Amino acid sequence: MVSGVSIATCLARSVGLTLLVAVYVATPSAGQTVRGVVLESGSNNPIEDVRLILRDTEGNVRAVAVSEDNGRFELVADSAGLVQLEVSHLGYASWGTASFALGTDATLDVEVRLGVEAIPLDPITVVAMNSGMGRLADFRRRMNDPGRAGYFITESEIERRPMSTPSNLVLGVPGVSVSSVGGAFGLDRSVIVAGGCVARTFIDGVRVQQSAQHSIDDLLSPDLIAGVEVYSSSLFAPVQYQDAGGTQCGVVLFWTKEPEVGGESGWSKSRIGVGLGLLFGILTLGIVG
Image 1 (cartoon, rainbow, N blue to C red):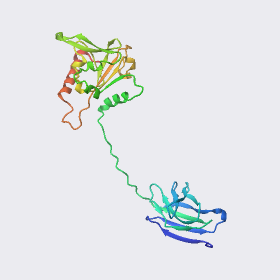
Image 2 (tube, rainbow, N blue to C red):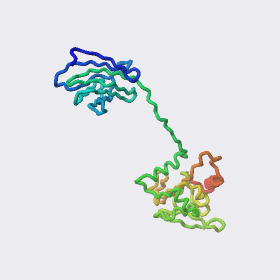
Image 3 (cartoon, helix red, strand yellow):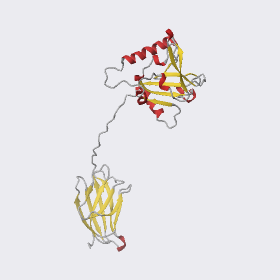
Image 4 (cartoon, rainbow, N blue to C red):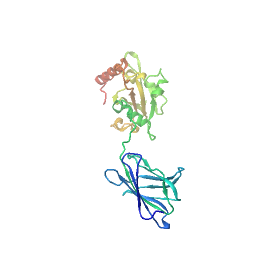
Protein backbone atom coordinates (compact mmCIF):
# COMPACT_ATOMS: atom_id res chain seq x y z
CA MET A 1 0.00 0.00 0.00
CA VAL A 2 1.28 3.46 -0.90
CA SER A 3 1.37 6.07 1.84
CA GLY A 4 0.56 9.67 0.99
CA VAL A 5 -0.11 10.59 -2.65
CA SER A 6 1.63 9.17 -5.73
CA ILE A 7 0.87 10.83 -9.11
CA ALA A 8 1.64 9.20 -12.49
CA THR A 9 1.01 10.61 -15.92
CA CYS A 10 0.26 8.24 -18.83
CA LEU A 11 0.21 9.25 -22.47
CA ALA A 12 -2.94 8.10 -24.31
CA ARG A 13 -2.93 6.16 -27.52
CA SER A 14 -4.65 9.12 -29.28
CA VAL A 15 -3.23 12.61 -29.62
CA GLY A 16 -4.41 15.06 -26.98
CA LEU A 17 -5.52 12.47 -24.38
CA THR A 18 -3.89 12.22 -20.96
CA LEU A 19 -4.63 10.38 -17.74
CA LEU A 20 -3.62 11.74 -14.36
CA VAL A 21 -3.80 9.12 -11.61
CA ALA A 22 -3.69 9.78 -7.87
CA VAL A 23 -3.68 6.83 -5.46
CA TYR A 24 -5.16 7.34 -2.04
CA VAL A 25 -5.31 5.12 1.01
CA ALA A 26 -9.02 4.48 1.57
CA THR A 27 -11.09 2.94 4.27
CA PRO A 28 -11.94 -0.77 3.98
CA SER A 29 -15.56 0.08 3.07
CA ALA A 30 -14.56 2.04 -0.05
CA GLY A 31 -14.13 -0.98 -2.32
CA GLN A 32 -11.96 -0.98 -5.46
CA THR A 33 -12.97 2.34 -7.03
CA VAL A 34 -11.89 4.40 -10.03
CA ARG A 35 -13.49 7.82 -10.05
CA GLY A 36 -12.83 11.17 -11.64
CA VAL A 37 -13.84 13.61 -14.35
CA VAL A 38 -13.81 13.69 -18.17
CA LEU A 39 -12.80 17.01 -19.76
CA GLU A 40 -12.43 18.22 -23.32
CA SER A 41 -8.81 18.73 -24.23
CA GLY A 42 -8.03 22.40 -24.86
CA SER A 43 -11.23 23.83 -23.37
CA ASN A 44 -11.53 22.06 -19.99
CA ASN A 45 -15.28 21.74 -20.57
CA PRO A 46 -16.79 18.66 -18.86
CA ILE A 47 -18.11 15.99 -21.24
CA GLU A 48 -21.41 14.29 -20.50
CA ASP A 49 -22.50 10.75 -21.48
CA VAL A 50 -18.96 9.41 -21.89
CA ARG A 51 -18.94 5.61 -21.59
CA LEU A 52 -16.22 4.22 -19.30
CA ILE A 53 -15.45 0.51 -18.94
CA LEU A 54 -13.11 -1.17 -16.51
CA ARG A 55 -11.80 -4.56 -17.74
CA ASP A 56 -9.39 -7.08 -16.33
CA THR A 57 -6.46 -8.42 -18.36
CA GLU A 58 -8.64 -11.25 -19.71
CA GLY A 59 -11.14 -8.79 -21.14
CA ASN A 60 -13.86 -9.35 -18.54
CA VAL A 61 -15.90 -6.26 -17.64
CA ARG A 62 -15.46 -5.32 -13.97
CA ALA A 63 -17.43 -2.06 -13.96
CA VAL A 64 -19.27 0.29 -16.33
CA ALA A 65 -20.21 3.94 -15.87
CA VAL A 66 -21.44 6.96 -17.86
CA SER A 67 -20.23 10.44 -17.03
CA GLU A 68 -22.74 12.95 -15.67
CA ASP A 69 -23.39 16.48 -16.95
CA ASN A 70 -20.45 17.75 -14.89
CA GLY A 71 -18.17 15.09 -16.39
CA ARG A 72 -17.95 13.13 -13.14
CA PHE A 73 -18.01 9.32 -13.01
CA GLU A 74 -17.34 6.46 -10.61
CA LEU A 75 -16.41 2.84 -11.35
CA VAL A 76 -16.52 0.26 -8.53
CA ALA A 77 -14.81 -3.05 -9.33
CA ASP A 78 -15.90 -6.27 -7.65
CA SER A 79 -12.32 -7.41 -7.07
CA ALA A 80 -8.76 -6.13 -7.00
CA GLY A 81 -6.08 -6.82 -9.61
CA LEU A 82 -4.74 -5.55 -12.90
CA VAL A 83 -7.34 -3.58 -14.91
CA GLN A 84 -7.59 -1.36 -17.97
CA LEU A 85 -9.79 1.71 -18.44
CA GLU A 86 -11.59 2.22 -21.78
CA VAL A 87 -13.21 5.56 -22.67
CA SER A 88 -15.46 6.31 -25.65
CA HIS A 89 -17.88 9.00 -26.82
CA LEU A 90 -19.30 9.83 -30.24
CA GLY A 91 -17.35 12.74 -31.69
CA TYR A 92 -14.23 12.13 -29.58
CA ALA A 93 -11.24 9.87 -30.03
CA SER A 94 -11.72 6.54 -28.24
CA TRP A 95 -9.04 5.76 -25.72
CA GLY A 96 -7.77 3.10 -23.35
CA THR A 97 -5.02 2.81 -20.73
CA ALA A 98 -2.34 0.19 -20.30
CA SER A 99 -2.92 -2.26 -17.43
CA PHE A 100 -2.59 -0.81 -13.95
CA ALA A 101 -2.98 -2.29 -10.47
CA LEU A 102 -6.18 -1.65 -8.55
CA GLY A 103 -5.56 -2.68 -4.96
CA THR A 104 -8.07 -3.98 -2.45
CA ASP A 105 -10.13 -1.12 -1.00
CA ALA A 106 -8.11 1.39 -3.04
CA THR A 107 -9.54 4.49 -4.73
CA LEU A 108 -8.01 6.00 -7.85
CA ASP A 109 -8.86 9.57 -8.76
CA VAL A 110 -8.35 10.18 -12.48
CA GLU A 111 -8.70 13.07 -14.88
CA VAL A 112 -9.40 12.05 -18.47
CA ARG A 113 -9.00 14.52 -21.35
CA LEU A 114 -10.54 13.70 -24.73
CA GLY A 115 -9.58 15.32 -27.99
CA VAL A 116 -12.22 16.01 -30.66
CA GLU A 117 -12.10 13.51 -33.49
CA ALA A 118 -13.61 14.01 -36.95
CA ILE A 119 -16.19 11.31 -37.71
CA PRO A 120 -16.29 10.05 -41.30
CA LEU A 121 -19.88 9.68 -42.52
CA ASP A 122 -21.16 7.35 -45.19
CA PRO A 123 -22.37 9.20 -48.29
CA ILE A 124 -26.12 9.65 -48.63
CA THR A 125 -27.57 8.95 -52.04
CA VAL A 126 -30.74 10.83 -52.89
CA VAL A 127 -32.83 9.41 -55.71
CA ALA A 128 -35.21 11.93 -57.24
CA MET A 129 -38.28 10.69 -59.03
CA ASN A 130 -40.30 12.72 -61.49
CA SER A 131 -43.65 12.99 -59.72
CA GLY A 132 -45.53 14.70 -62.56
CA MET A 133 -46.49 17.55 -60.20
CA GLY A 134 -48.05 15.05 -57.83
CA ARG A 135 -50.43 13.35 -60.27
CA LEU A 136 -49.35 9.76 -59.72
CA ALA A 137 -48.17 10.52 -56.18
CA ASP A 138 -51.75 11.35 -55.18
CA PHE A 139 -53.06 8.29 -57.01
CA ARG A 140 -50.62 5.98 -55.20
CA ARG A 141 -51.28 7.63 -51.85
CA ARG A 142 -55.02 7.07 -52.16
CA MET A 143 -54.49 3.52 -53.44
CA ASN A 144 -52.37 2.64 -50.38
CA ASP A 145 -54.80 4.22 -47.92
CA PRO A 146 -56.31 1.41 -45.77
CA GLY A 147 -59.55 3.40 -45.49
CA ARG A 148 -59.86 4.04 -49.23
CA ALA A 149 -63.38 4.30 -50.62
CA GLY A 150 -62.65 3.77 -54.33
CA TYR A 151 -61.68 0.89 -56.58
CA PHE A 152 -58.19 1.06 -58.08
CA ILE A 153 -56.90 -0.46 -61.32
CA THR A 154 -53.11 -0.60 -61.53
CA GLU A 155 -50.80 -0.45 -64.54
CA SER A 156 -49.92 -4.14 -64.19
CA GLU A 157 -53.63 -5.07 -64.34
CA ILE A 158 -54.07 -2.92 -67.46
CA GLU A 159 -51.10 -4.63 -69.14
CA ARG A 160 -52.76 -8.00 -68.60
CA ARG A 161 -55.74 -6.77 -70.64
CA PRO A 162 -54.10 -5.38 -73.80
CA MET A 163 -57.26 -5.67 -75.91
CA SER A 164 -59.45 -3.65 -73.54
CA THR A 165 -60.60 -0.13 -74.29
CA PRO A 166 -60.37 2.50 -71.53
CA SER A 167 -64.10 2.26 -70.89
CA ASN A 168 -64.01 -1.55 -70.65
CA LEU A 169 -61.28 -1.42 -67.99
CA VAL A 170 -63.95 -0.59 -65.38
CA LEU A 171 -66.09 -3.63 -66.17
CA GLY A 172 -66.47 -5.70 -63.03
CA VAL A 173 -66.21 -2.76 -60.65
CA PRO A 174 -69.22 -2.87 -58.27
CA GLY A 175 -71.87 -0.29 -59.12
CA VAL A 176 -70.31 0.59 -62.49
CA SER A 177 -71.31 -0.41 -66.01
CA VAL A 178 -70.59 0.54 -69.62
CA SER A 179 -73.34 1.54 -72.05
CA SER A 180 -73.31 1.95 -75.81
CA VAL A 181 -74.79 5.14 -77.20
CA GLY A 182 -75.36 6.24 -80.78
CA GLY A 183 -72.57 8.29 -82.27
CA ALA A 184 -71.62 10.19 -85.39
CA PHE A 185 -71.74 8.32 -88.71
CA GLY A 186 -73.78 5.55 -87.11
CA LEU A 187 -70.89 4.41 -84.90
CA ASP A 188 -71.63 3.40 -81.34
CA ARG A 189 -69.72 4.99 -78.50
CA SER A 190 -69.19 3.57 -75.01
CA VAL A 191 -69.81 5.65 -71.90
CA ILE A 192 -69.18 4.71 -68.28
CA VAL A 193 -72.26 4.73 -66.06
CA ALA A 194 -72.15 4.84 -62.24
CA GLY A 195 -74.59 6.05 -59.61
CA GLY A 196 -77.44 5.76 -62.09
CA CYS A 197 -76.01 8.30 -64.57
CA VAL A 198 -73.04 8.98 -66.85
CA ALA A 199 -69.96 9.09 -64.61
CA ARG A 200 -67.97 12.26 -64.16
CA THR A 201 -64.71 11.45 -65.97
CA PHE A 202 -61.26 13.02 -65.62
CA ILE A 203 -57.93 12.55 -67.41
CA ASP A 204 -54.98 13.67 -65.26
CA GLY A 205 -57.37 15.84 -63.25
CA VAL A 206 -59.02 17.50 -66.29
CA ARG A 207 -62.78 16.93 -66.63
CA VAL A 208 -63.93 15.43 -69.94
CA GLN A 209 -67.56 15.09 -70.98
CA GLN A 210 -68.65 11.63 -72.10
CA SER A 211 -71.12 11.77 -74.97
CA ALA A 212 -72.30 10.02 -78.11
CA GLN A 213 -69.88 12.14 -80.12
CA HIS A 214 -66.78 11.57 -77.98
CA SER A 215 -66.33 8.88 -75.35
CA ILE A 216 -63.28 8.25 -73.21
CA ASP A 217 -62.17 5.68 -75.80
CA ASP A 218 -61.64 8.48 -78.34
CA LEU A 219 -59.27 10.33 -76.00
CA LEU A 220 -57.12 7.57 -74.51
CA SER A 221 -55.42 4.33 -75.47
CA PRO A 222 -54.74 1.67 -72.82
CA ASP A 223 -50.96 1.80 -73.39
CA LEU A 224 -50.93 5.37 -72.02
CA ILE A 225 -52.82 4.62 -68.80
CA ALA A 226 -50.87 4.26 -65.55
CA GLY A 227 -53.90 3.76 -63.30
CA VAL A 228 -57.62 4.24 -62.87
CA GLU A 229 -59.66 5.26 -59.83
CA VAL A 230 -63.36 4.41 -59.79
CA TYR A 231 -65.91 5.75 -57.31
CA SER A 232 -69.47 4.44 -57.58
CA SER A 233 -70.78 7.73 -56.12
CA SER A 234 -69.47 11.28 -56.21
CA LEU A 235 -69.82 11.34 -52.43
CA PHE A 236 -66.93 8.88 -52.08
CA ALA A 237 -64.56 10.63 -54.50
CA PRO A 238 -61.78 13.07 -53.46
CA VAL A 239 -63.42 16.39 -52.73
CA GLN A 240 -61.85 18.18 -55.72
CA TYR A 241 -63.62 15.75 -58.08
CA GLN A 242 -67.04 15.70 -56.42
CA ASP A 243 -70.11 17.19 -58.10
CA ALA A 244 -70.85 20.61 -56.61
CA GLY A 245 -74.44 20.20 -57.81
CA GLY A 246 -75.02 17.43 -55.30
CA THR A 247 -75.67 14.60 -57.77
CA GLN A 248 -74.43 11.14 -56.85
CA CYS A 249 -73.10 10.23 -60.28
CA GLY A 250 -69.97 8.13 -60.03
CA VAL A 251 -66.47 9.44 -60.70
CA VAL A 252 -63.74 7.83 -62.82
CA LEU A 253 -60.18 9.20 -62.78
CA PHE A 254 -57.75 8.13 -65.51
CA TRP A 255 -54.04 8.77 -64.89
CA THR A 256 -51.54 8.64 -67.73
CA LYS A 257 -47.96 7.38 -67.51
CA GLU A 258 -45.04 9.65 -66.75
CA PRO A 259 -42.69 10.47 -69.66
CA GLU A 260 -39.69 8.15 -69.64
CA VAL A 261 -36.60 9.71 -68.08
CA GLY A 262 -33.86 10.11 -70.69
CA GLY A 263 -36.25 9.75 -73.60
CA GLU A 264 -35.98 11.98 -76.64
CA SER A 265 -39.26 13.62 -75.83
CA GLY A 266 -42.21 13.24 -73.48
CA TRP A 267 -44.55 13.60 -76.50
CA SER A 268 -45.18 10.43 -78.45
CA LYS A 269 -47.74 10.12 -81.25
CA SER A 270 -50.18 8.65 -78.74
CA ARG A 271 -49.73 11.55 -76.34
CA ILE A 272 -50.17 14.07 -79.14
CA GLY A 273 -53.40 12.29 -80.00
CA VAL A 274 -54.62 12.56 -76.42
CA GLY A 275 -53.72 16.24 -76.31
CA LEU A 276 -55.55 16.97 -79.55
CA GLY A 277 -58.54 14.99 -78.34
CA LEU A 278 -58.72 16.96 -75.10
CA LEU A 279 -58.35 20.24 -76.97
CA PHE A 280 -61.14 19.25 -79.35
CA GLY A 281 -63.33 18.35 -76.38
CA ILE A 282 -62.67 21.70 -74.71
CA LEU A 283 -63.55 23.62 -77.87
CA THR A 284 -66.62 21.65 -78.87
CA LEU A 285 -68.11 20.15 -75.71
CA GLY A 286 -67.38 22.75 -73.05
CA ILE A 287 -65.23 20.58 -70.81
CA VAL A 288 -65.58 21.40 -67.16
CA GLY A 289 -62.16 22.01 -65.44
